[in-house]
Image (cartoon, rainbow, N blue to C red):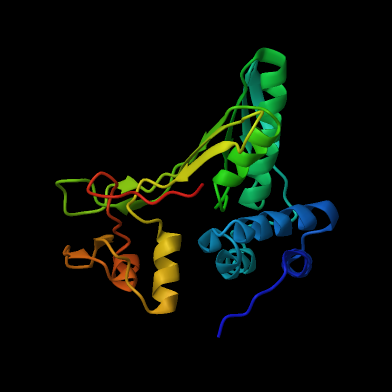
Length: 234
């Protein structure tokens, strides 16, 4: 049975959930809003569907909800920040805001962030830049969960990339893509529905090409882009 929930109710519920996890005030509101906006835009794999995993990382101590990202070094348009294991989406949003400040001063701004965790939807920070009138690019490293072409074992990460270009008249152009045929979040959605994607998506534990989302997730062996269609979020 499908249940439809209004956006205002969704956001309010997620903000309360963040408060129960220990986030406070404006940080709880921002964190909940980022999850809610991602769901509103149809990227369920990194919105509501991702929240249980986020809660788990908080409960395991992998995410410190009291911590905040901070600048540790910089020169001109370049800065280096550390996340102190604060919620990854909040740290990414703060670093994009700082990059825009630097760009306003120098014409370009670049902020690198370490000691962080999953930043949820990369496109959130592309939209953040575009809505402020900036061209934005952001990317991150990832665990080795893809098998390079011609290999049999995992060797590269499914490193997401987001690019955004603002438009004065009309919708902004925002690309948010992983380096695999399907992101693992999308595969989790197929698994939850008991379905398989329409195209090959990865490898099983025996190294066989597969469309079985559970087998691919268990092997952590996604199929790189370049073989067929690539599915992106706009």
